[in-house]
Image 1 (cartoon, rainbow, N blue to C red):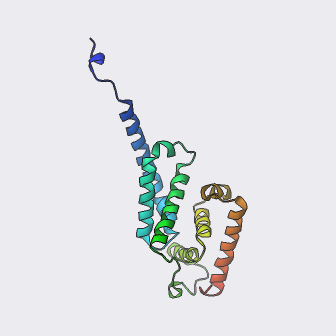
Image 2: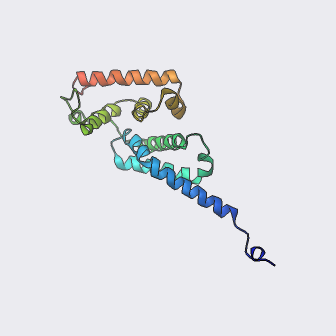
Image 3: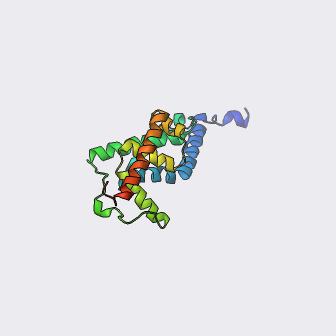
Length: 179
């Protein structure tokens, strides 16, 4: 009997599990900040965004063997997290509408990146949730086609939502935040 025959056979399941765990860890390392920023643009509650993301990541981890084979695992996780956020918001009867007194009134051209992000978050909060998601993905640099695929919308709908969001933004700036 040789040594190889005496040793228990290598467990392919254990090796596969380790590969999947490492793949998921790399995905988290690269995509967590992107996913969290996307969700934070959907609501003003950072903790709620984190909760939604963590719930989505738990689901993704359980299905990672399938999810990791997708062309864009990020899309799958982002969409799952987005739906989780919607569920959490509806359970809490969360209002994403920012009180008018918190709207920067005299901002025509944001001075710095923090001010621009604050104005953008207020504008996003005033949009219906699908338009908000479309605009947040535009800010991530996604193409209209990718946004349509991720949110299960027609490309023409994505373009319409982008146009409506821009119009709403201009109205809000013109009206000093009361739109």
